[in-house]
Amino acid sequence: MIQRRLLLATPALALPRLAIAQADQRPAITIAVQKISNSNTLEVLREQSNVGERIFFSSIWEGLIGRDWLADLGPVPGLATEWRRISDSVIELKLRPDVRFHNGDTLTAEDVVFSFSRERMFGDTLATAHGRTIAVGEGMPSPRPGKELPPEVPAVARRAWPALERVEAVDAMTVRFHNATPDVTLEGRLSRFGSEIISRRAFEAAPSWLEWARKPVTTGPYRVVEFQADRALLLAAHDDYWGGRPPLRQIRFVEVPEVSSRINGLLAGDYQFACDIPPDQIPGIERNAAFEVQGGTILNHRLICFDKTHPQLRDARVRRAITHAMDRNAIVESLWAGRTEVPKGLQWPYYDQMFHADWSVPAYDPAEARRLLREAGYRGEPIPYRLLNNYYTNQNATAQVLVEMWRSVGLNIQIEMKENWSQILERTPTRAVRDWSNSAPFNDPVSSLVAQHGPNGQQQQVGEYSNDELNRLAVELETGTDRARRRAAFRRMLEIAEREDPAYTVIHQNATFTAKRRDIRWKASPAFAMDFRQGNWGS
Image (cartoon, rainbow, N blue to C red):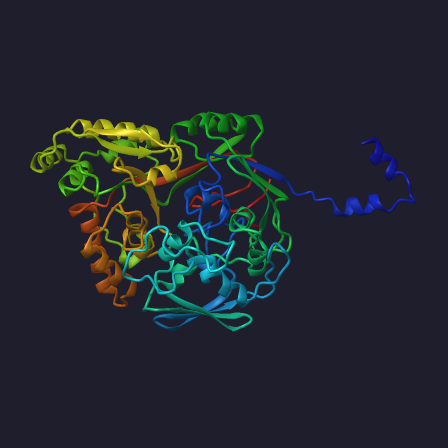
């Protein structure tokens, strides 16, 4: 401070005036989260997670078609200002002019084409994968030596774009997406998690895929400064952002696994935001008038998935018994204080005319569960149940309650705690039941039921589940253009996947709650994503 006063008092020195003029008075904030990235990367094609959505969207990554994060999550212009259908399988988009990447380059059609290229997304898989299951690992290696893609990347790419044929640069600011089949959901696919745009030059300049994935160069309002795996992520304002100068100078995400530590740090002033707050902690936080909790239900359902190759789960009647032994309403009332709800299966009302309002999850019916177990000849053999340590809010408590519900009908389901998602998904003789969640990246069942459980969905990619009729219907849902036929196909898929040959069963709709200082004018999104762009910040 003494040196600064001396400099200010010395007329001969011009540097202090320059420093004052350039001083950035915008605030820097710290956000305490349960986890930053499950894969320890920041690449959307590798980090397909709830925690990834929180840090990626409205901060780092952007697609051609965006989502209205502060309203109904509907489609809005993003890096494209307009789009039009050329045919049932071709869509054309006009790029937004003067968009700058974090390295200063200007976005062009070539960056878009490269973002959907074999090198970046699909590896050596040349033919479209439509109608067959792409196993995790297929499509390796990348066409470029030294840039081998992790096996999850082509698997995710095929989940998002099962029939993408090519992307064409019509001119410097116009692109066309050509699909191998008709697809009424192309606009939704362009707005989904995994269809964001990268800098071709930055990707090609990176020494390895991992180095790229830990500091990707994109167009969002904040750029990556430093990423410390399992510890912290520091973002800085991208002042050339097309959407206006970001209101924050820096955003720092820190991993604080324990709920109590996140809350205590918030109350002590160490953090301005604390995420993943359980409902039972909300009243205690809000007793302090300086703080508030925002949030509610989101487009994500908590569920459990079945590995039907496990000896005790091959008989669908055992899986059906598991679904009927679950009192989901009791979980909502006891663990969530009624702040969420039991949904109508793996669907959301924002599917609009594709939504089946008269559908329901399997009824809580212990007598039916016991009957099914008797018919199946189940004799109490152990069934492992894999989960992480409170990755989801109330995860452990929910699992313990479910185990007791199952035990009451004669099911011997035993919790196996795992350290990471790789262990959860690992194909071993003990893989049977696992905790999971499903989101709806856009307003059609192709984005959830098909993308997660269909031929190229994660369950089938890792070898947990397959059903021939469901797979045929998934192709019809993806390629059909008749709305009534698509709606009927979706309902039949629900019947198969949730009742006849269960692939999963929904527990409850997910909800997320974020605690913050009350004097910060900021609005939570009805999603995991946190929006810190212009118009959603003040103090």
